[in-house]
Image (cartoon, rainbow over all chains, first blue to last red; front, top):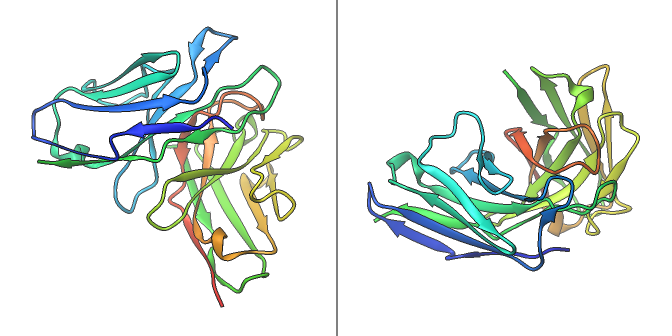
Length: 118
Length: 123
């Protein structure tokens, strides 16, 4: 299985400042059918299920504020929150969903990054 | 609105069985592959199983293969996870999650999650 490694494990950022979370995959997650990287980001607040923020590396899910952005290629990806708000305190997970068409590959998640207010 | 409601969790002894359910509404259930993802207390997310929209294809994590069975009833808009031979390491919150597509092998983008149901395996 593809191993996803996030850094840092925890992060404290001041309100209004930029937060950056990194994610590295153990192999390329480039999806051949559309030439996009199969990488998603989820936000999980305490006591809640995960919420999809970004997929295909940089596509924001409907309703997600534009202060959230994703980037990266190959095996290195980044989630950036441009101006941290109090409601962004959460654990963030990256997830790969790489597959070869018509072949099942299990999705895997990073270990999570806990984001707090400094 | 799209909604998934998980139920069926509880306390079970090692070696026991339990069936989880996930009631779906707000979307065409048969057009979405469905999944179970679990989260051990204080830990990260682990994919458990996937079923295609038709129910004809199923997939399992190695950690549960042979012990868990995923199924769906499209007439009732409900997803199930039958768990047997439960172990302490199966203790987790189990979430059902919807994919954005119907095939079992299509990209695993989980765009909606249930609230989760807690399974505790302990004597």
